[in-house]
Figure (cartoon, rainbow, N blue to C red):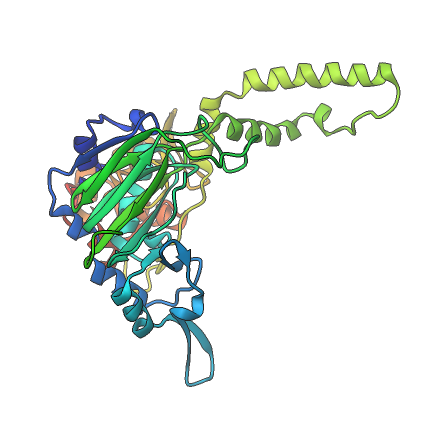
Length: 403
């Protein structure tokens, strides 16, 4: 995938060259194109999304000075003419909350917004990890969440307004959500304290304590997006190995409870099998298998009802892997293994590049019927027809050289 303009801007702002610095240390900078943030999301577009969709906690939450408000303060059930109750954000109540000062949190906004959906997928292809984007709209003189740490790395993009931040060093190295020890004492070592303004970006690694607030700033607002990137750990690898162990009969036997000699023999057999498993199934294999087995995401699929597809895009969470095999080529992605003729490789690489591609142009360039191949990729969940709404998420943000 050609890098998203946001990713290019963040790399420039933080002095990064690829994802290797992710999670290593705190970093802060400014996008070279400050106007890019309004293309991503504005406060009014966020409110428009809430107005047109049925959302309720935990998808949407409101806080006032660090305390989460009860859903009845901003959620109401609308009744259809057939007496069906549908939870919706009460825009009138929410407007009063924003007027008096609150923090509006929308989790995983990429589910409802094409622009954020494309941005998240681009981050995933870049980091090779799952990414979730949450948005935070804070108004007037109010605080958000209290001082806390996250169990994943975050990249924060200030989209509008201003917000004060306090970032501190971790108290425990690389803490986890499920951990061997609690991590409840904030560090006194301040890493950075200051104000983010529209166009500023910041990277906070896992375990760094932080707090964002608008207290003392008076009237105004702040909108920022947090891209949460949860990297795999050795614990995840061991959990995967535990699943793999079911393939070996020695691990499926009941544990011996009686007889010292029998227990010792089983322990020896288990230890030898475990050592062989650790050596034979590396962390690299785990990461590769995880990418290939990720199921296809939700997408529009018309099955040709409105005519053959004209423009498609690869929708997998991670870049598909192409493996030549004699006179065929095998495609791994979206939990599928697809075998096609080797002569289709040029067309495959164009169709799976991660950007919208025009099938007429691909057919002409590759010398094959790209529509037929595209239908297979769509049916298997690797690609999707590019609707007008989805195309809007790419336009001006990702190059469309093949379109």
